Length: 374
Image (cartoon, rainbow, N blue to C red; front, side, top):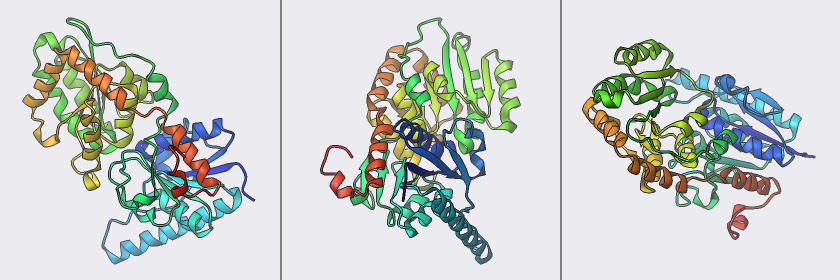
């Protein structure tokens, strides 16, 4: 018989793990024991994830058309399904919740084969490949930026994207515009794949600013390990105070401290910026599958909380003009911050936990949609 245990499955990147972590905190507060199935990439986040146990599960992407590579990928996934099935047999979860990324495929597939209730959460405005593959098998689909008119819309319940407790805490800090001659804190980050462009584009754009603006800047920038020293040296050469690192464990607090955020537009990033309420220049990652980042960014821009600029349009001059112009317009930045906060969904973790418990109890999505919330 199933007990008070829930198994979460997520890919090993922050974009997948952060909303899973937020849900875990909410479920634990309700008396559930939470387990996590993921891959080795999650090690850097392991210290903050509140799981009773983390289960490494074998999985693989299916990107190659080479027959041998395909055979290896399917064999790895099948091995992961067997591992996940054994985990499910042992811990007897009431429900299995997936958050996207290829490591979710084996646990969710194994759960559906064993008749365990299942739910996937899609953070983006466009459904990812792993979730697409699972959409037809699961009992419900929770949407962050996803529309109920998307594929499998009958299963979609809009919850928003859960944000971590650190983000909720950071949201308590009101936005305070930077006045003339006051320090201006600029936060720049791009995720594991998207940071290289910022490492190349930001230093020359900052260097092109008038000296009066450069002297106000305090830059915090995420960069790939191999780009750290060149970026640091560039800022040092033209006298700008900068903290550059491949990873910040306190990103929520840094967003709250920023007068302006320049970033990619993954779903978790956009959701956290909105909940905290900070003005942003969003640069969608141009190589994102299905252009999901562009769709995420458009949602916040439509609310007035961000500006969206395709990477191809951001020459040194264009980037310098955007930053310099906003530095001189604190009223505009304050208006964007207010609009961003109004678009945020700080209650998303609660709504997703409600849905999770409803699916665990055997309720159907059609029944849940009759009410205002699960």
